[in-house]
Length: 139
Image (cartoon, rainbow, N blue to C red):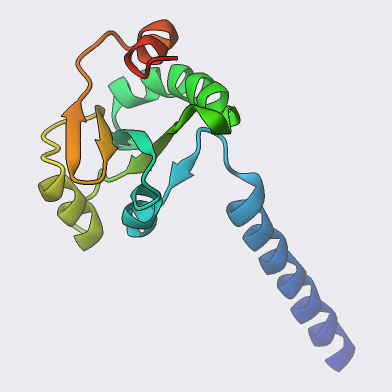
C-alpha cells in the first residue's frame, strides 16, 4: 500500500513538472503574457502592439489566428524594434489586475489593440489584417 501511494505521488509530481514546463516554455503561441506581467513586458522600451482580449469574446476568437500569425512574424525579427503580445483581461469583476489594466489603458471593449512605448499609448484603428498591422508597425 505504501509503495502504491509513493508511486502515485511520484506520478503527480511528474505531471506538475510537465504542466509547469508547458505553460512557461512551450505555450508561447501568439506571445501571450499574463495580466500580472504585462507591465514588465512593456518596460523593455520596445514599441509593443498589445491586443487586450477576453477569452469568452467571439470577436477576439475570430481575430486570434490573424494576431498569432502576425505576432509570430513580427517577434521573430528582433532587430525591428517592435513586438506584439496579447493579454487576457476579460474578467475585471473577479480579477483586480484585469480591472487595473482596463482602467490604465482605457479598455472599453474587446478586442482592443494599442501600440505602447513608455508612457505613449496609441490606439490601433486599422483593419484587423496581417498586412494592415504590419503596415501600421512600419514593417
